[in-house]
Length: 381
Image (tube, helix red, strand yellow):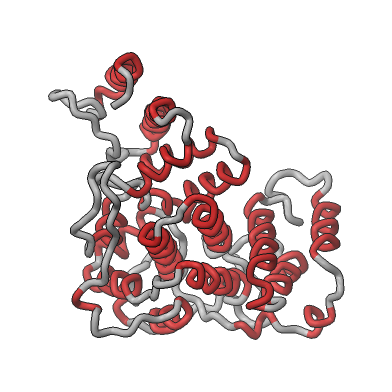
């Protein structure tokens, strides 16, 4: 428990600001992970949770790592599932906080995880876990494979994605066009057949070696970003392009803070769910690695520093979002590819280098936003 003074401040803040939405209930209990009713009240919840986690940081004597791991991996409603909302936006904030040693960013990551926590995501990830720890003192236990799927072989991400691409249970579920948003995710998870398919493919991932899974997801997320367009019509999907950053963020969190084997498995399992959901919402485009093979790329002799200097020179004087690389997602993508090259270059060769040069040379804006006449990915119809 927090000191009495801090607890009184917390209760006062909640009571004054959030009585309408019952963050403090009549019997004195607190809803620490409520469902946010709408966007208008989201900012209010963010302020309340930011204050709460700041108080918690004091209770943990400033040990931000212990605070974060406790809330992410333990309790009746662990915040792990919330880390993957918004294609891993809280996860990316958490990794930024770790890399920059900035506790405020960690508090923001926990806040967004709490505010954007989704019950359907939690149910899917924890459905096979009857032993989740509800206290911070007991060691957490994590999902086991569903008995329904035990007869099915465990597979790599690429093998699963190939099967998922042709699964009829996911056909016609997304009726409003591509776009990763809460409504699209709800359509998938509220459809019994589609939900069963997603649960199966998440369950079939071989998570016995989390480091290997992250290596595989680094390569796959790169292909999903740079090798899913039609031949001769380069296009980069705004939602698929977030996946490499999400993978890199998971790598930072795992290698820096997460030592427990079960927690590592849970982290990569949640990450894989994000990849599956984004791939489905973006209408399961064809992945063609040959699109990253060209004479120009093969003959490119400039290195990463020359590439970054070229991009920096190109965007000098441009406004945010203006064509040419002023978009933060563009920079995030490049940074993730460069980090992947450092970590996995020995395994995957020049994959990330070629993908980065392709992005620099052919990116003219994002597709997948639903704009009129935007270039479409290579979608199976």
